[in-house]
Image (tube, rainbow, N blue to C red; front, side, top):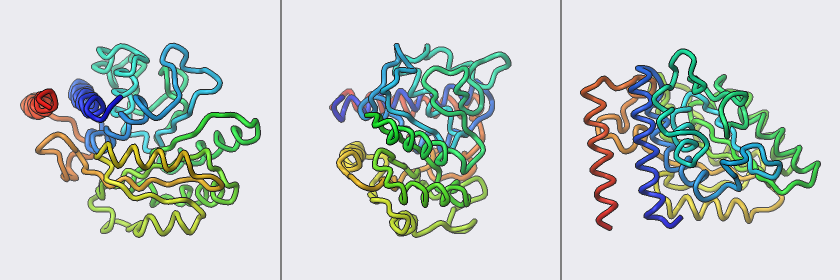
Length: 278
């Protein structure tokens, strides 16, 4: 897809996030929206995947380490054709396969169940090491939250990945600077994030994580990097795309009411129309 097509799809992914969280009356819109462009690029451009064959052996793997932003992953999967977009409205409903956190046993396209913060990167390292041992062609991608990387297990996994030279592993940090209790640099600062990953023998790339030109360049660079894993520090805006949610910590884990939902969808409708004028 070209940049314009990706931007249009990202609007659709964001609509799915807002609609599903509103329908559930619960969920995590802020971090889902900040990472929507990353989800879009991964599923519509970067990864070797096939919605018709979700378990194909040579597929690239994705682990959503910050599992609470499942609405973003689900919306990308649905728009990519893994399951009907209409099913997004069943998020968190009793009997729905779309649970509040990713479930690999019931959701097509989900490679790892996640939700307990800090654990996903370890699983991704295991997948990457398995690929190395089997001389497999697939790559492994893991998306972590910037608040999540305050967890010690993240750095144990990073130490392992760097030591094992897992160059088939790409870690993306959604650095929107807000976690549930406030700005990350006031809660328990993980800064400087880039220097920390460098010290664990990662190739590090800093980008605007809401700019598709920079996203593309970073993933191309990660793919070309040999002998060490890559960490992409994606500087993003929490709640990106919805006016009243942007950079507001209160929207970390709260669903919009009916009035707020209409405002959000109008914001996204206008964004989509503006892209159609390009």
